[in-house]
Length: 185
Image 1: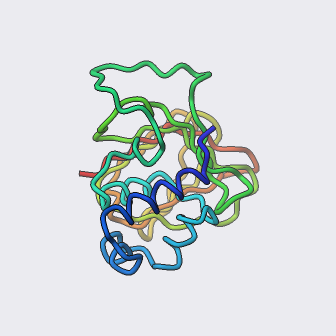
Image 2: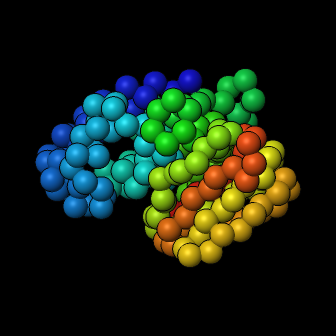
């Protein structure tokens, strides 16, 4: 399991080492000072898309924020037992993420397994530079994209421009599990 308190401390340390005030950091990332302060103090568990924006603003790979080994690799295997969990149902908006390639440094994509818990009735709305893909592994998801709503069943895949506001909720009272890949240029 990824230590969320350590993530916040790492972000704060990296920001300060670059002589960035919280105000300047907020302008660079597009997030509010209050939100970034909560992330740095581990009061908010940011989603993967937010960590990608933060890592880009700091000029480091997301693996550095997650405290992972950055030895050069051209191929890595992450065993199921070695996945790390980011976010918990009881924190933030309820999503949780399992890392799928956390040991690969300087990734261009961030693959995870996203779980949206049963009973979720609302979600943060995500919007970030790049592209995203989600493949539903289990359950059915109501996927909101801009002003449209789609129902995705097990086995369905959606690939989209992540600059458009988007989020997902369970279509029924069951957990939704997806492979999610985020690419931020």
